[in-house]
Structure formats: structure tokens, C-alpha cells
Length: 237
Length: 231
Image 1 (cartoon, each protein chain N blue to C red):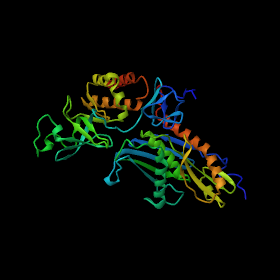
Image 2: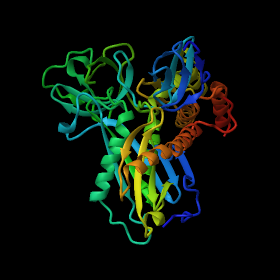
Image 3: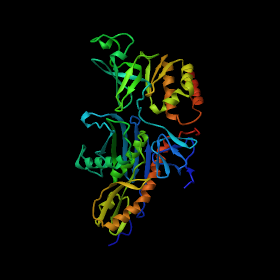
Image 4: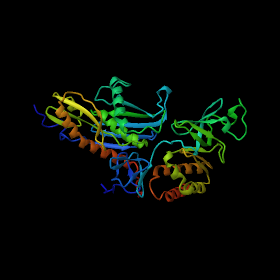
């Protein structure tokens, strides 16, 4: 069986439509919004600030604490049960690990940087959208970081490698694998790699090669959004 | 190898991971780092090129306490030997009894007589340890408790713009609004004057915070204050 045309009519290596904004939450030190297709992620960053209970404090560097949460109405019909779940805890953890390699938290010992990721609407690829939003929010907060992180999913549907799967595609009655990937654009290093489904080694390596270009495209969008915050109408530079 | 190329120009806004220059002829300074032969930025900021040195002026970030800085702090707690002071940084500072006043404070005295919880004080950082424990002192010219007035908190990276070249910006606001203004290095600003003037001054400061990276700021602020005063 062969997958000829994608469910939503995109090309096999085409991303969904992306929107990104920075500085949307005035109370937070840094904040960002990232929308890819129908998946919407909001992220806000607080800190570095004091960390309690104090036994969690690390005297060599600041701690990064991520919190991923889907809003109750964010699913497609059924109410998402609020509060932490096994899934959201896992995603919080992988978000943290995906972001940590670029962050330099040495100058703020004994403190914590809190990153909140909230999803108001989800249609697959939510952890990737969350990571993209979180890295923009961290940059907006003035945290020292070597690079932004860009993330998107890649996968295999039947015999085709596809980029940025949406929910309908993930749920197809076919051989589907879904691999969220996060990358440091300047070095090409991968900071998140998970998989759902089955894929063979050769295809996986091929998929990771293909995903680089869309990830760099996302990086450009992130950069543009960060700069746009500082454009002031009617004023010249 | 020796073909060094600059990828940005002075005053450009750059984001983390952006390529600033190629080749070994340029040197990375504040907010930048070298990756192989390239210089990349590690912060959101404005590029400043000074000969061969490339550095960034950050556009946001939390205050990092520095020895010798004069800051405005808020008394958070009182204990046996002094006060705990909130500094608008990630750390809480200590003001000990012996540094709190030029008078001798006897042991066991009622410390609320000097500063109460919630008071704002203009104070100086005397010491910062490697773990960022901060010591404060009230001994020095102009250091005092700040009575009445209002407090505006801004991004600490914008403090140099609020002050301006040799204090030009802040004295302009002071003169045109007839307010007394004190700017703490930690981004806390104290304004005292007539209520309407205080309001105009605080609005002007908020505009500076928002538009600090755009040139011609002093003129715009001057016009803003004039137009506000007419109302």
C-alpha cells in the first residue's frame, strides 16, 4: 500500500502554517506564542528567582523547571482532565532536557527559571510547539543561551516520510510512526528524539536528514518573531 | 582562513544563535561566543562593534547584583541582627544592624524604629559573594529611607537609558516635571512630586523602557511630557 496524498493536501515535506509572537504576557519576564496548524502553545518564563524548598537549590547553577499543560478545552471534543498526568509530566521532563543544552545558567546559582507551557488547542505536535514557544520565551526573558531550539515532528506513513504530522494523519489506519525532533540550529545537534510507532534504521536516518530543512525554516520564523517585538511603528532605527 | 566577514552592522537587534561574524579577525565580548570560526550571539540584544570587538547590549534580563551599585530595595523581613531586603534580583540581600545607621544601634533594640517591613530604602551593595549573597549598607552620601512618593519598576537593562549620557535623560525629566527622581541600578525607580507630575514622569519612564533601543529618544520624551502637561 502506498500513501499518495496527505490528508490535508500538503506536500510530504511541507510544514503546517506557523504563526509566532513574542512578548504576549506582560506580567512574565519573557513570553511567546507559537501556533503550528491548529496546535497553539503559549509559554511564559519567570525568573531567575529564589528556589524553595531550599534543598532543591543547586549552588553551581540555576535550575530549569518546565511545566507542560493542556487546557481542559484544548482537545477535540472531550474535556482534557486538568492537573498533572503521566503524559504531561513526561513532556515537561523532555521539554526541560531539550532546552537545557543551550542554556547557560551558571551566573544564577541557587535559583530557578520557571517555564510554563500552556496549550489552548492541540492537533498533534504539541510538545514540539511547546519547545519552540519556550525557547523564544527564554530568549525574550534575557536568559543567556547559545541558540534557540526548533522542534517539529517527522514520521513515516506507509512508505512515505512526512514532516509535521497532524492528528488525523497520526490516527490513520496505516503503518504510522511519529518522531518529534528538536534541534540546535547552529550546530545541528539533536536535543529531543522520541518515537511512537515502528520505523527501520535506514528510514529513521533518512528522516532525520530530511527534517533539518523544515527545522531551519522554523528557526527563521522564531528569529523574525523575536525581532518584531522591538519594531516600533513610525520610529526609525 | 583570513577572510573575516561581518554579518551584522552596529545597532542591529540580534537573537540567540545568530551569526555575527565569520573568521578569526573579530573578537567575541559580552553576550557573544565563538563557535569554530564564527562568532554567534548568546542573548537578545543590540550589536555594538568596537573595532574588532563585538559585544551585545542586552535588551532584557534580570538584575545581577554588583558590588558598589546603589539600589532601591524593599524591606521584606526583620530578624535579630538586621533586615532582609528585596532587591528585584533573584536574591534577597541582608542589611545588618551595624551598617544600617550612622548612630549606634544597641543590641536588642527595636529595629522597626529604623526601618519597617514594606519600607523602601536607597542603599548600597557593599559585598556580593560567589553564591550571590548580598550585603548592604546605609552608610554613604544620600543613602536613606524613601518616604512617600511612588515606585516604578522597570527592566534593569534599561537603567542606563533612563539615566542617559551623564544623567541627561533623568535630569530632563526631573526639570520638566519638577519631580524628585532616584534611579536604582536594579531597575527600581522612586518618583516624588505633585501627583499629576509623578504620573507624567512614570509614564515617560515607561516609554523609555519600551523604546530604549530607538534613537531620538530624548526629543520624543521631551515632546511627550510637553503634550501631557497641556492636558
